[in-house]
Every structure is written in C-alpha cells, then in structure tokens.
Length: 227
Image (cartoon, rainbow, N blue to C red; front, side, top):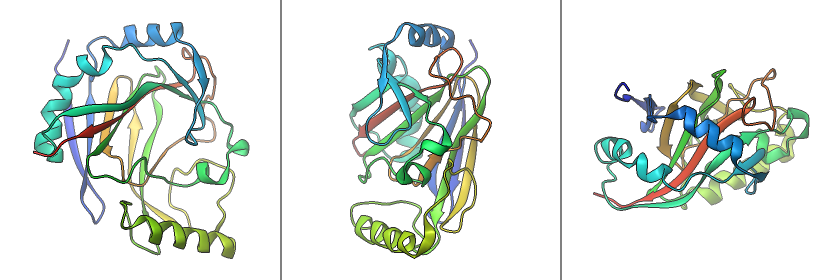
C-alpha cells in the first residue's frame, strides 16, 4: 500500500485548516464490505440520510494517520476522544430537504472539535464545500458567534432568503463558497467542526440507500486536546 498523501488548505479569510488525505485507509474495500453487512437507520441531527454501525477498530486503526496532522496542522496534539463515528449514506431527495438541510452548517462550536469525512463510494464525485456567511463574514461559528449568526440568518430568511429545495454546492445570495473538495475513493477530509460547510451533492447524485451504490462515507466527530 502507498503511504497517505496529505494536502493542507487554509480556507477563506480566517485561514482555517482543511486537510485532504488521499489513500487514508489501508483496506477501503474491507470497509465497503463491512458497510454492506451493517444495519442502517434514519440519522438524527438533520443529517439527510442513514447511519450504520462502524467496525470498532476503525478510529484506532486510523489514529497514526490522524496523529500526523492533528498536532502539526491543527495545533491539537492532546488526547483524542471519539464523540461519534458511523457509516453514513445521503438518501434524501433535494425536494424533501428541510430548510436547515439546504443551508451550510457547523457540527459543533468548540475549538477542540474536529470532523472527519472518509469517502467510500467507488464512483467518486460529490464531496464537501465550505462557505462564508456574506452578511456577517463568518466562516466559523463558535459559542460567541452563534447568537449573532443564527439571529442574522433567521432575519434574512424572514425577508425572503429561504433557499430553494436543493443541496448547497456553490455561491448563494446568503453564502459564498470558499473551498470545494471533490470526493475520491479512500480520500478523507479533516476540518474544525465549527467551519460552515455542506455536502456538495449535485442534482444528478445517486441517492440510493444501498451502501454498494449510494454516497457511502464514514463520518466521525472527535474532541482533541490542545498541545
């Protein structure tokens, strides 16, 4: 197996780190096989699809690769706690998305929180996009910014800014895209959870619930101590 290849992006005006890791897992085919054996259920927390049980050793097996970036690139070299990790498949058609699912979002407000997306679809394609909120200029939303961001966003939508029924993949009247990362097989994406982002799901995406056919990923949320 080739060694993983790391690419560091400094995103937008806030220059937050987003790391792309190609060749992330030593045996991605085994992960796809495990996903086919897993039981999937409707996801919580506004995720537009299904989540399935992930093999327990996954994060341990990937810890050496993650350690190579968490300290040098994120400044987080402390203990790693797994908040949640699972297989995920996007299945919701654009016309069935609720308003929150049509907007960029953040996963958590704390600086210690790190998100990981591991792309496992053979067809590559739809990845992840990052955004700046135009009126506030925010690219990240922490606990201090959250009341300002959500208050402003609610006001904008009351004034007619409700987004159309689609996944957000590019610039919109309310948000400017700062980076888009294509999904490639066995590519992982690691970024601070408070970065505004969205799955970049195109209108022709295959939204099958079958892990052999649909947009299969591993999604993991970590809490990482400081240096």
